[in-house]
Length: 267
Image 1 (tube, one colour):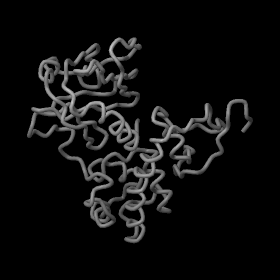
Image 2 (tube, helix red, strand yellow):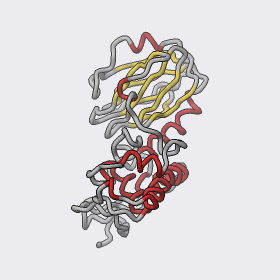
Image 3 (tube, rainbow, N blue to C red):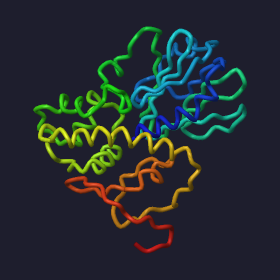
Image 4 (tube, rainbow, N blue to C red):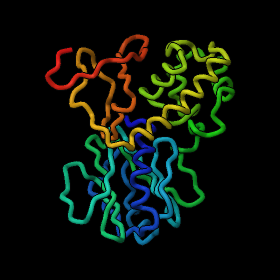
């Protein structure tokens, strides 16, 4: 599953190409995504001008004149800006065609992504009960103390609850807990005030460092050390190069630093 820094990096990448353009058409080649694409979306968005591209949690929000297109990348989804005439690949399910001929193309082999229309002033049910963004002022150690009070669940599980804070997935949570010095299986309600303050700071720091480094054209190693399984699941946005601490699956899920090995190197 793409982590929040990847989705934010995607937003920053496509926004300059979309903002201010008008939608010429929406082409739906495969409507059977995680939820079926509504058949009337194409007619609704045609001719509307794009005001901005925002993000809420892991959803991209393409702001139009009468509402928003809400896109989720799912587990294997990605978007590209391509010129007219670009050859289609297998699993290129959607094209948002712009008035300059370019198109925002959605590619999703596993079809766990989704596309919804949200009318102006409405709130989609998928967004209705989400917690604060990691970088919001509302998210803090004090907020975590309130949200974790009385919870017996492991802190990592609680931290990945979108009602507490949005966008924190498996790798993100492991990195933040590692930086804060908190064992991921410790009950969420039994963590001190000082440690929760450190955890909130770490949760805020991870996406900022990731999105800044993801913008660099840093090459990825072709192969990681395969002496243990890897939880790095999506390298399209160079997440592996940014989080530099692959996680060893174990009972405790404690992240440790592993050496990276190039092809042909023995581990």
